Image (cartoon, rainbow, N blue to C red; front, side, top):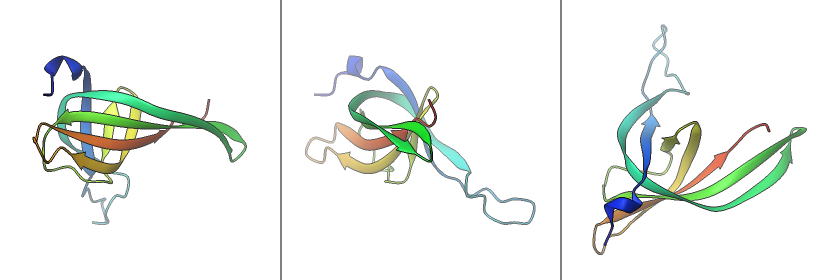
Length: 110
């Protein structure tokens, strides 16, 4: 059973937007909100690497939230100033209590 007390992080889920510029061209970097809700975030692992002469880090996380059917890979999750990219959606199809989002994030320059 999914306990409400474990959902202790406020997140916003976003999908790629369909914003158009002044020339009616799609804006590739636009995002629109799908939902703001409570979730739990577990960091699975992290790694550091050198990319383009700067230090960077990458984190793999699992985000659990109440069951819903409108989530897909390619969406993103905002938590504070951290952006998580959703790589897979893993629903609890048996009990339909929760959905786990497999996510990655790059922290950029340190």
